[in-house]
Amino acid sequence: MADVEAVGDITAAAWRDRLVGILPSPVLESLRGDDLALVWAGSLVNPPTPLHRLLVAVEGDDVVGYAAVGPSPDPDADAGTAELLALEVDPAHQRAGHGSRLLGACVDVARSAGADTLTVWCPLVDEVRRAFLQSAGWGPDTALRDLATGDPDDADGLLREARLVTDIRAT
Image 1 (cartoon, one colour):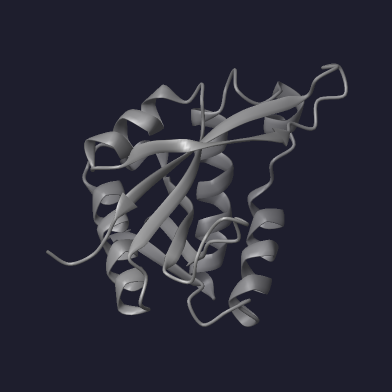
Image 2 (tube, rainbow, N blue to C red):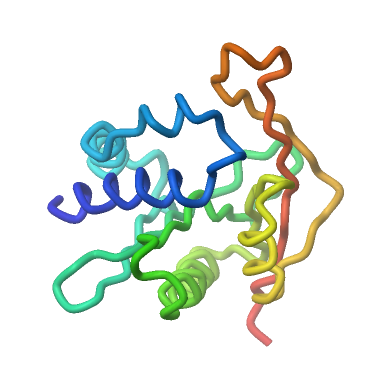
């Protein structure tokens, strides 16, 4: 469970770095690694399904990134569709291959559980994340969704996301 503290800290740091201008500043400033670690700890103690997995990237003895995978909750998903639920690398350790290795490990986990498709939701305005995923073979399908940003000053307060998908069948 020691990894969970690092996962919480990485989540807070990565979101503050990656989501500036995407999520409201008060939301980003309110992120606390220890609070996020509690959420992750709860999901590890009692995972919703056997497919739900948390994978970590390490450099030496330090956790520097993580990814989570599970079955897709999307209403149009079939039993062969898994979802990349999270993928974050500590900003100080990005561009060292950790994200690519985590992505590959998630494909392996999902494929071993019988999935043939992997999906992920990506904010339309997060061009860096979308470019990373597209360089790894992901592409958009037609699905879009809006998430509440938690900004009380924004009348819409919505973040538009596009679903990206990749075929993970062994070739």
